[in-house]
Length: 355
Ligand SMILES: [Mn+2]
Image (tube, rainbow, N blue to C red; front, side, top):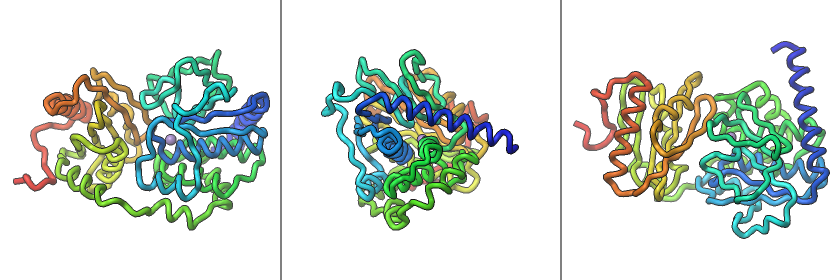
């Protein structure tokens, strides 16, 4: 990248930061929302934005969520860093005169914004056909699909504003960047690396280690064993339908794990939680996970989003009986095999019923 382009990018970034600060300074109280079951990048971005609002603009804020913190690492992140959040249905919306959406956008399937809520700030890095930002309503939009993590975008605003982040916020942002970029190895831009370096001086390394390797419940290993028995290997493509599973996070986690299998170019993984069938797609670096997930769920009542080699989505089923599930799995499999140009004839199983 040339020096002049870098200077221009920095300038644009600084101008954006000014806009965000100026907007917040006209408000009294900020409500930060994210996707329903927040992942580390959304939590990091949320905590970072709260820090920005407080230190750069003198604005108090609250973080509210709709779903649950599911993955053991994410629960450890909340515990270790003392991240406070309320359930959205217990929050009095009238108490807030500013609403921000972080790591997601209005209209995304896994995101709940109460009807009639004006979203003032959107900070995100996803591309998704369902994005429904109304520029006449949302005063500040900072969506950068070329950046690896929303936490990076938020950390960039702290950096531009000359704010020294607290250890807590820096650790949250850094962990957000690490998880979305697989330790700065996947979907990573120069910008991600630059802000990570900035944060690294303020990180609590002990807590970061505790977050990265938490204890896991026995049920986790049971689910994993079950998932592995359902893996099907095609030429370069690994499919896994977990059937009924405790959480969408487990689907993502199994997808991450399977991508590490030798010879795997892409993973398409799904699982039913309630009436929703969650899908996680992973490809090797340079692959296009979003196109693959779109092709996979085509024709279904679903929504999806992604960036680079990572994508996720969900499909709403009219009924969650096993026959409906099996039929859906067959349709998805057919679509994915077609999209990958892979023959469906030679699937190999990992499971015990392998011959
Ligand atoms: Mn993210």
